[in-house]
Structure formats: C-alpha cells, structure tokens
Image 1 (tube, rainbow, N blue to C red):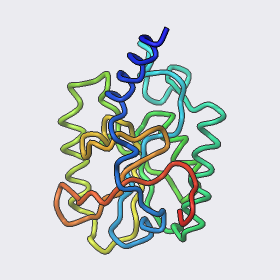
Image 2 (tube, rainbow, N blue to C red; image 1 turned 180 degrees about the vertical axis):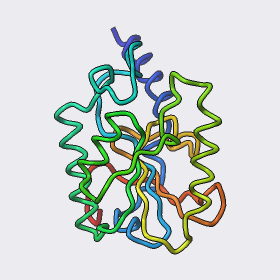
Image 3 (cartoon, helix red, strand yellow; image 1 turned 90 degrees about the vertical axis):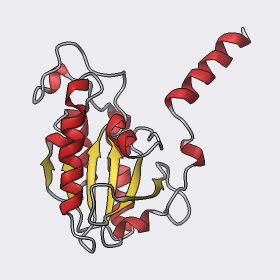
Length: 193
C-alpha cells in the first residue's frame, strides 16, 4: 500500500523539482523597472493537449477550469495591489494562456507565437526560444514591467525553477538574450506579497 504512494511522490518530485527551495519574491519586485514575469498559465486540468489541437479553436484545447479562472483573477488583483498597473502583457496563442492573461486584467493582451508551447512540438523549440530571446534583448533595461503568459516548458528553458500552474519566474532585463533570473513569485497570497 505504501509503495505506490512513495513511487508517486518520487515521480512528482521529478516533474516539479525544487519549487519550494527557490527564492520567493514579494510581488512588489515586479513593479521595478526592467522586470519580466514569465508566468505559467493558470490551472487547466489534464496534461498536454488533445491530438486534434488547433490554435485558435478553444474547443480542441485543454482550457482553464473555474479554479484556474479564479486563480488568474486573484493573481491580477494581487499584482494591481502592489502597483503593477502599467505592465505590457503578452501571451502564448494557446487559449488557456490567453484567458489567463486577460483575466489578470492588467491591460491589453498581445499574442506572441514565441511564447507557444513546444511540449508536443519539439521541432518548434529552438525557433520559439530564439524569437523569445531576441524579443527579451530588445526590451529597455529601465522599461516598464512585462508579463509573459506561457507554458511550463518555456519557463523551464530559462530556469530550472519549474512553475506550478499560475506560478512564474521573475527576470531583470539586462540588454542581452538571457535576462538575469531574480526568483519566483508565490502563487498563494502571503504577508508582503
């Protein structure tokens, strides 16, 4: 009886390494100039996408459920509460990412193919990451904050801090294709966040 539970926990630790050990930042860190939040979309039940997946057709995709929509709204409320009202918001073309970005309610959302998942599309990995790195290199060091709503595999390409749904990593723009990693944001509200 205990053996399956232990195996499940070991497997989970492989898929979600060390999130709790990564430096958690107060959300107010995002309001500083030149900050980028690379955010994994909010909760969407399931894993990957159905075989009939089509960009732009949400009926063929894995989408946010009610708890995912509430999670995105809550994060948006928390970000506005710390003064993040002038961010530029970009999103993957996947419906769950676009919906997360819109529910944050931090401004207009622009879709960006470079943020698309390459989980089931390994041939897109290098093309997407090259485009995203080029975009990051063009951002001003002292510019307004940027929020990138994307997928776990994209965030993992920049840091080993595997984000849970609705979690993400904060970076400091530095004029290069590899912005400096600052830490992670907590997905649950806590003192000072």
